[in-house]
Length: 97
Image 1: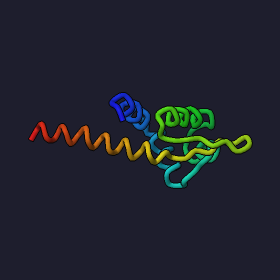
Image 2 (image 1 turned 45 degrees about the horizontal axis):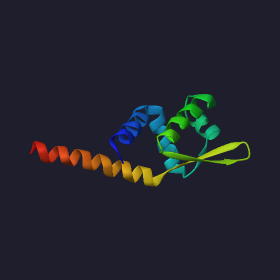
Image 3 (image 1 turned 180 degrees about the vertical axis):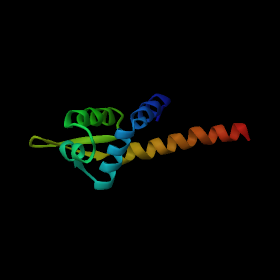
Image 4 (image 1 turned 60 degrees about the vertical axis):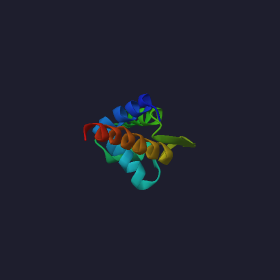
């Protein structure tokens, strides 16, 4: 994972509502936009915009079923992000020690 992707994911997660939406999806395994919007004090349109940002960052994937979009966390992206952050900051620790 390159630095550009790390920053893109970090920006997506910097919004507390998006972070909470991602947590909700991870906890449930899969969620649709309407169900997520009911869990948070946001409209379905706002939830859809948050999901778009998470999708563009590669954090969630969408599956269409009829008129509903179901979202799942992309575990490989999450693992790569955790690893890339760990590497970025382990290098910084080595330099400062």
